[in-house]
Length: 104
Image 1 (cartoon, rainbow, N blue to C red):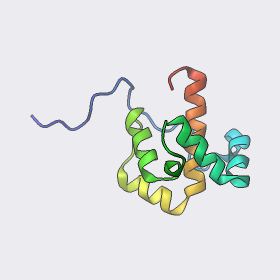
Image 2 (image 1 turned 60 degrees about the vertical axis):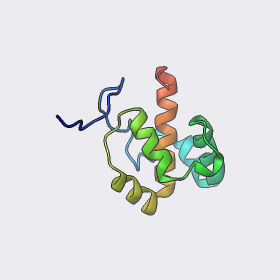
Image 3 (image 1 turned 90 degrees about the horizontal axis):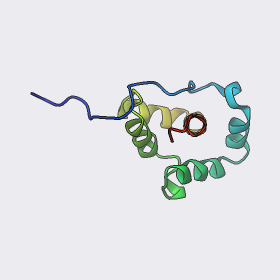
Image 4 (image 1 turned 30 degrees about the vertical axis):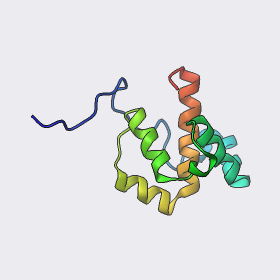
């Protein structure tokens, strides 16, 4: 019997906000537009990673895996290649929501 998914304590889900849900958390999006490197460091810090890792596809993939968020490496690569600011803002919004829910 082949294992097709890793066990997780979280049910499969999607990100809590869409990639382009700018108005869902204007503060985070403005933070990303005005000081993108600072937002990247904030995401990396939340994930206990080096600031240089905040914009990488790996951070997004690790986060998706940790919280059992649906997606793929190919999707992560495309999102980071064509919509990096939106990708990092989406991660930060999701992190903030999970902190509010007590599951981060």
